[in-house]
Length: 140
Length: 178
Image (cartoon, rainbow over all chains, first blue to last red; front, top):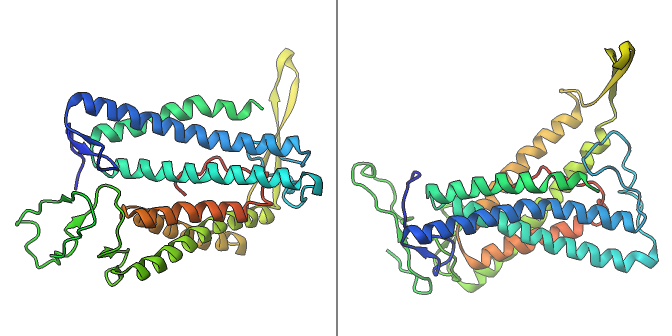
């Protein structure tokens, strides 16, 4: 199996079959947007976590992973009156994590189609997504 | 060649006689390239592991679910082990020229482990385990079997929910597939 340039591909689902250059361009655009979404979900999850912890007055460390101090936050459990809020917040985080895992695997399967246009779409989408989303990580 | 009647159209990989004429087993010519729901003749990772009945598929679902949960727990465990073992902090101060001709002291701080220390070796072993499990999960997802893919996703979500409960404030933004 090797990378080929082709206008025909079947991506992920039976109904997503591409036969024409226009369809291929549209599919590459969809895959590109999917990669952008994946990168922004990664950043969004981190920001949500940080903002939720800050809003519940849980001591946090900086968002950009400077692990020079002791883990202040990981040992203090939230107080009981915010326990339910924390539960819902964490449940939402887990759902976002599931979406992130699934989209990551979808992108892996898209690249596995060995179609070079789709591969370019994934790469460029990841680059654009990283470029747009990661500066937002330090803007607290 | 067994035909799976509950699946959609298959994508047959054409095999050229020149490259496959060495007596290789032809039992894996049917690779699904789209998602399907089925439990007949599903090969899972290893050559002896074939799922043929609904009961076997249920068992495989639970096993994959637990594997994905274990993977998320392993990630969190490695993070906490790393934080606990990073106690050596080295400060290097060096003079640098500042504005207006003054001399400023610039301090560099490095956090690290020794290479042959036990925490680092343990981290390395756990890293190998994590890489292998992540590739196994990728290969399981690559079977395109709907049940198994749902098991991977649900296991990852449940593992994240259970193990990140208290480790809530350290975020690892550099992880991709791993």
